[in-house]
Amino acid sequence: MVWRFSGIPQIHPQIGTEKFPHMNVNGKPTRTIWLHAQNPEIVQIIDQRCLPHSFVVEDLRSVDQVARAIQEMHVRGAGLIGATAGFGMYLAALEAATAPDADASLLRAASLLKGTRPTAVNLAWAVDRMLRAMPASRHPQERISVAKREALMIAEEDAAACQAIGLHGLPLLENLSQLKNGAPLQILTHCNAGWLAFVDFGSATSPIYAAHDRGIPVHVWVDETRPRCQGSKLTAWELGQHGVPHTLIADNTGGHLMQHGQVDLVIVGTDRTTRTGDVANKIGTYLKALAAWDNGIPFYVALPSSSFDWSLRDGLKEIPIEERGSDEVKYAEGLAEGRPVDVLIAPPSSPAANYGFDVTPARLITGFITERGVCRAAETDILGLFPEFRTKK
Ligand code: MRU
Image (tube, rainbow, N blue to C red; front, side):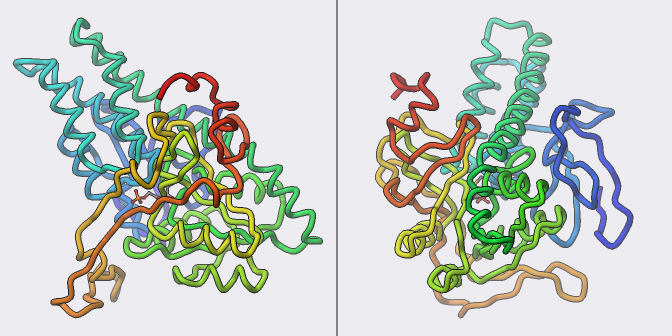
C-alpha cells in the first residue's frame, strides 16, 4: 500500500487497543507494526526508507523477509527492531509447523534474526523471549498461538513503556519550562528516537509529545543525523505530523547553539545501555553529550528497560558497534523531480568509514527517563528502579 502525502490518507488496521492512543499520520492514529486485519499470518510495517516523501506499507510473510526488513532498515530503531523480531519469530512458528525438523527451523530463524543488526539489544532480547515462550515440547498449533500472543504482547509493552516514559519525563520539561517565562523550551535531539523507532510514542520524543499536548511551549532542534538522515527524514516528519514546532539543523550545529544559550536540554534515545549507565546511541551522540557537559546543559537519555543490557558493565569495551556500507556515506538520497534518487557526494575512489553508533559514558549523562521513573546514570540508581536485575549480570 503506497500513498503520497498530497493525497487523501488511507487508514490501515492497527494492532493496538483503545487503552493507548496512537501517534498520528495525517491526523489518523498510526503504529509502526501490526498484523494484517484479514490475514493475521502477514505482518505489516511502514517501510521507513520511503519517508518522508511517501507512506508505504509493506507486507512481511516470511522470516527471511523480516530479516531483510531489519537488515536493510525498512524498520529501524531499537524498540521497533525488537518488536519486528518478535513478529518474525511468530512467522518462524508458522514456518516450523511444516518443516521436517521444527526445532531446528526455529533455531535457524532465531539466529538469522539475531544476526541482522548487532548494536540494538532489543533484538536479541525479543528473540530470546520468544524462544522461551514456545518450548520444543509444544504442539505446533499451540506453539503458533503462543508465539502470536507473545509477539503482540512485546509490541503492546513497548507502546506502554514509551507512553510511561512520556509521563515520567513530563515534570522535567514542566520544571524547565517554568524558568522560561512563556518562551518555548528549546530541546535538542539526535537521530530518531521517536514513535517510528518504537511501536508508538517513542522514547526521546514521548516527553516532548506529552508536554506539547498539555500546552507547554516547546521547540525541537533536530540533528539531521548523517549518513542515514533519521533526523531529517523521520524525526522532522513525525514532529511535523504531530504539530510540534521544530527546526532541522546540520549535525555539527548543536555545539554552537548550546554556546549561545539556545538549547535548554538534550534528550536522546539509546540502542543499548549497560547496567552502569554507558549509552550506545546513533553516531554523533557522544559529541553532543560533550558539548552539553561543557555548557552545563542537562543531557537525558530516554529508554524502555528492554534497551538495558544487564550483562554489560563497560560500554566502550563491550558494546558491539555496527559498521555499515561505505555507500551510505558517499551517496545522499533525496527526491528529484518527484522521484527518489541517490547522488554521489564524494570522490568515487575515496574510501569511507561508516560507524553506526558511539558510546557516551555515564559520567556525561544527567539522567535516564524510563518507564518506571527518572534516575541518575549510575548502577545503584538504575537498580533502584529495576531491583529484579540486581543479581543478573
Ligand atoms: O540505525 P537505526 O536508525 O536503527 O538507529 C537507531 C536509532 O534510531 C538511534 O540510535 C536512536 O536514537 C535510538 S533507538 C530508539
